[in-house]
Image 1 (cartoon, rainbow, N blue to C red):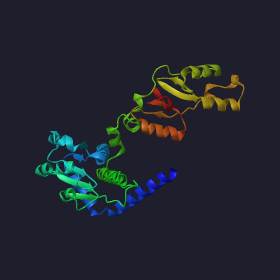
Image 2 (cartoon, rainbow, N blue to C red; image 1 turned 180 degrees about the horizontal axis):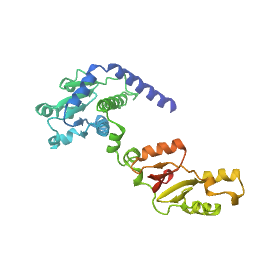
Image 3 (cartoon, rainbow, N blue to C red; image 1 turned 135 degrees about the vertical axis):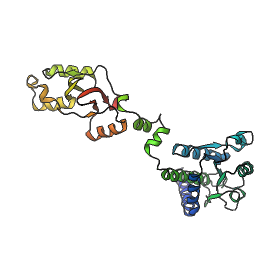
Length: 309
């Protein structure tokens, strides 16, 4: 079974390398044509090509090129009404002769849509009736019977990815743009959420500079942040972390002689609440800290703890 798996990988990689060698100035022309069009990109295909088309449409949409998938069967029953005159149509059919896809072409031509085809046959009917054709002619299918679409669907998928990435880079699409389209994901959280939205503001552990070692230990345990804040919300004098406690004990095991000022960090990192979570977490990882104070000019607004989010 392992040898079969490796053979499939080898065959599909071979086909992808072959298709990569077929890429020419037509690809550049396709990218420029899509950029020049003011409408959406509509991806059309049936069967396995339709499934690939759905993924290509999703990738285009999430990388700055508004797109959706249209099944030819639905198109024939009223859904052609969603196709605007400025839209670009991407037709996917490895043979280039898929009947359902062919039936859509007359409408697209009448509607003056830009038509881009992705097929394995530049001389096919679909290719010849397109403004631009992207050739995905493979060397062979990974299926030993050459029946199940395998290498051919992979080639179509990668060509779609190549188009999406080329458009993405041409539009100078950035992480922040991607995050806006993925607000529920981890990237959206890091790039769109500000630290003030997630900081803890209640039951913060405060102590004064004259507190005893026992007071520090009790306050730290009750606060459950692994730290205590020296001072008050209006004026932060410093912080003591559990690491500070351990280091202090190693130097002087007589707790009666340990003062708050001996243990505290007098100039802790204080982050403005408007900073984005992603930037703050990078800083915290660099400094190897799990908590950061949020505020300004030594006034405390809250505490952000990376592992509780």
